[in-house]
Image 1 (cartoon, rainbow, N blue to C red):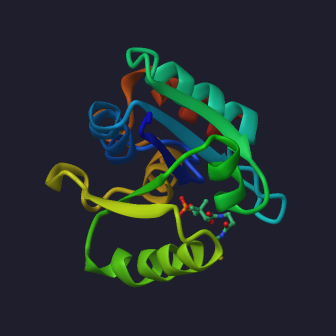
Image 2 (cartoon, protein in one colour):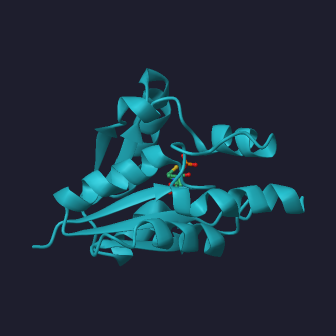
Length: 161
Ligand code: PNS
């Protein structure tokens, strides 16, 4: 049976640490779906379609990674892809409590879907989409924080605001 994993998140926009989790997952699983939350309550910097397009651009070198947006419950998206695994990156102990809560809530909803945690690479353990946006807002350098191919897209968003 093909091993199919979901990497869920907001990815607004995708930082290097999350791309690293995708690259490492691509080696472990037959198919990896990056599930971009289309949350109508939050107002993200990039629309869900834009976030999917950015992820598709930076993962085009992997032939088993696919990006799609989803709304509703993550486990329903996972079931629609026949996925058996949810993958989350853990940057620090501070991530653990929230991620553990989510993993247990998902397990309660769908006992057959296992959540796996991957430790972030140390270079990226402090990095988040929020930090990237804060730096971009002040025109600080983004090299090494996000994939080079999307740096200009992020600056462009702030220059339009
Ligand atoms: O990058 P984020 O914001 O930490 O990602 C959070 C995400 C998308 C993984 C989470 O909010 C999610 O799975 N949302 C969908 C609703 C859901 O299924 N929640 C879990 C049960 S409470």
